[in-house]
Image (cartoon, rainbow, N blue to C red):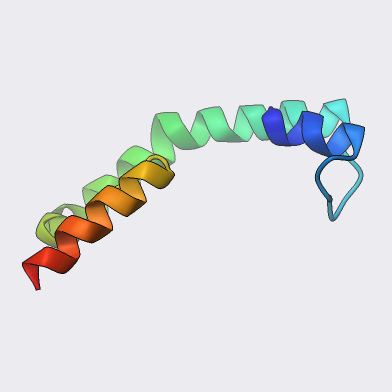
Length: 72
């Protein structure tokens, strides 16, 4: 949503023309991904859980990369 607004008002570049229809399609796709596909992907990756690092924001990347480097 934030990206859509920034691109619509010209603060952020876009590779394609932003439309309300496109935004609604993206929201539907994202909801489906979060509800179904993400769970399926995590299930496939379960055998590699000891190698898997899931980050949700930039702070997670900084914090988890630091702890991973200290384990080496």
